[in-house]
Length: 464
Image 1 (cartoon, rainbow, N blue to C red):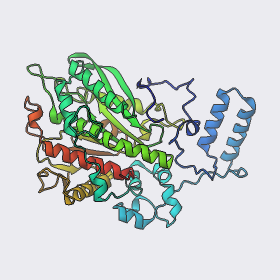
Image 2 (tube, rainbow, N blue to C red; image 1 turned 60 degrees about the vertical axis):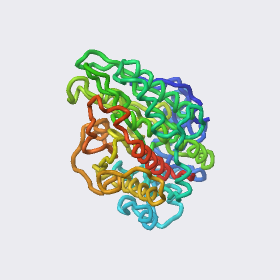
Image 3 (spheres, rainbow, N blue to C red; image 1 turned 180 degrees about the horizontal axis):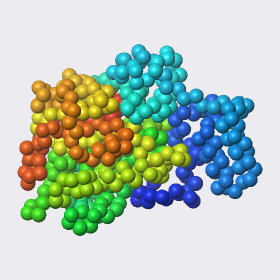
Image 4 (cartoon, rainbow, N blue to C red; image 1 turned 90 degrees about the vertical axis):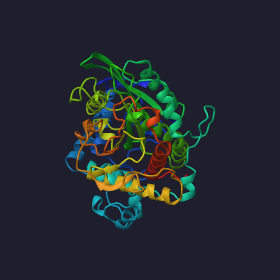
């Protein structure tokens, strides 16, 4: 069952799970929702990767016969010989131009072939593309929600005992009530516990990237939270992220309502709203791409922002993931970082009338889709706030060529496409004692949370 796994720490670098039979090609059979992205159930295919895994597995089992057979088959494939009934895989990356145009995706991102079967093989094609191309390709499999479906995604509950979806402000207030979240403080520990319990209770798989960081103020504990829905579902189309810590100030306790308690509240509200839809789609389809939330620790500088005094958690995670496999990855030889198709980072959100622009061309189709979601929600009368600084919309049509130093950079530098949703200019309360609950505009917080819920629901083709 999805999420049945206990809370576990992130496997240490170099841990190859020698005794873990649940990792590898057998995952397809052990877990519902797991898949080899490019294999069809009725078309068994033999690949170099598959033969390598078979050879490796057979050697581990110390089976000379199977090892010999796998070695012969591998040699045949290398020599270009065809094995009876097991043709080599031909990755399919073609998608109908008309479908992509209707979805707002640029046709040049996926070569076109009007074949209905190609849509069923969407994930195969996108997974074999360069990261910068795969973003638009995945969008060709998105859905369009109508106004009634969108209305069902509204989260309004403010009751502790309610089983309904809680408003983003409900979670934000809870997080702010814990106090400052500087690493090692009581509020920091309580925030980590709150995130972990909220998501694990929904059935998400929760783990941690835990380490000790050398800072200008001495060694500090770091504990980033990683929560995954269907972690054995192959590539994660979206990794939705925010930082969980708040900045250390010697003379006052900084709460960081916009920085980034409100983004965390939006993410928890999204998880409550969409988890039932994710479970339903997984049960109906039998497979679902992974959806992951990352809560980075140590984003804030302890003294002055530099390359080494900032983004401790994201730098550690990106470096670790570039060298190791995740506990549920299906393919030997690939890294956990390779499962990331897009990192969507939220920061400095919650104050009234923010200006939100797109910054990276690779994720422009995603930003455009978010703009479309905002228009639909506003036209349906489901948004309550006054909008952003650019007229009555939060998501501006103006792009920005500037790059803001934040938790996305360690991943961007390693080739992961990034959608950076950050208020620019920064809120007037940035890094002041005034960045508390009073700095937030509740209608803006709930509107942005609503846009996020609708956007993710469409990208993952979730019918409400």
